[in-house]
Image 1 (spheres, rainbow, N blue to C red):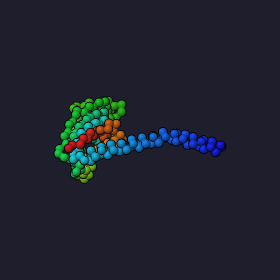
Image 2 (image 1 turned 90 degrees about the vertical axis):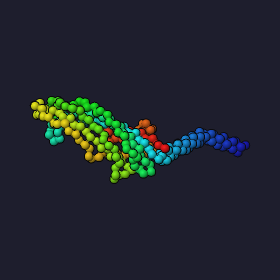
Image 3 (image 1 turned 60 degrees about the vertical axis):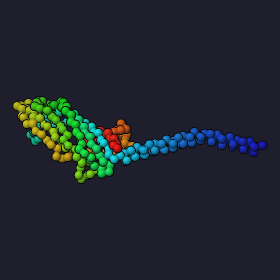
Image 4 (image 1 turned 180 degrees about the horizontal axis):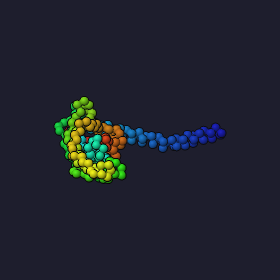
Length: 225
């Protein structure tokens, strides 16, 4: 009799344990199915970019920072807060890892605010003209081919009158144009990063965002047939 009771209790315990473990097994199965579906979706997204003959990039560059206005080395200069924007588009060959055709460039007027003397508590300078930055060309880096682009630019530095000795007679710096011969470089981001770790680059799943020397570049890639 005792043996029968013990067998029955053991059976009940096994059934209870099996029932308790069932939700965990179902959860693991759901997780495995979700992971499998995610990997298939990821593989399909990667194939879309890897199979594309050409990838078109629409790029928006936005600048926010401070600039100095005045003759270099003179000790008299103004400081201002600047915001600016450029847009450019280019086609990128998957096969050759390089540019296809000529990039298109669009420049926008810069906004200059809060002009002040470079020396704290000194009289405000007077600006004569407009500060303007223009992206003039985009070309492939011949050394780091398949990795980077070279951005060439031109900046108009307007004439400015800066009070000497803080409050004295103004000293004028003439207008000049600076060309960026240093060839600022930016990396061409491969769109597969959107699939693998896109959230680390942008909250938008269709964009990649990079920051470089005060500029924020937002890349929107699309595959071409």
